[in-house]
Amino acid sequence: MKRVIIVLIMLATATATGNAQFFVEGSVGAIYRGGTSSLDGVTKDIPSSLGVNISPLVGYRLNENTALGIRASFYSSTHRYTIADPDTGDEAVWERKTPGWGGAVFDRYQLWGARKFSFLLESSIHISENHRVEKTGSTTTTNETRSEVGIKTLPLVSYDLSDRFSFIVSCDLFSLNLYALTVDNKVTTLKERSCCFDFSAQSDIFNSLPEIRIGIIYHFKKSGK
Picture (cartoon, rainbow, N blue to C red):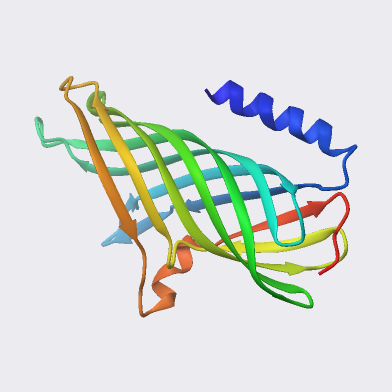
């Protein structure tokens, strides 16, 4: 499935160069936390985290208010810190690695636009999968695959920098997500399936700042508003 998504994006991008209604969009993110702490002359590593994600997108504008497209996402995260080994009591490194991918077919509808700003509503059918492995020392404690299929709706805001480039901002605040989740545990051989519904709404928007994503759009030909 991951290869199919990559091929579709490559084909759509190639076609877009000859069609003025196409646009491409992309966002890249990275996060790193780490360091050391010292107490009474004893230095220890503090918990560290490393995460990278990339999300390319190709869309087609049907008219000034409506667009369709496909999106892919690839991400990986690693968390590591030192704990006491439950068997020996000695210090051991706990580590969790979570690589994953996702894909979606979406439509966007412009709810309101004025000058350079536009408020959009995006609805999508999405799939994703990630593989999580947790280890303490050389012992694997968790080894599971999580797969998700669902539909999602969320608001977006775009700002035109020029006729060719725009910023687009999305956030899970006020988003709706209905999905089926499958968790396949390789250690216990237990497979669980569940249906989930998420609605994100908070009175304090600052609690949602980590969920804000900023991307850049390139329009092969910007249609007027």
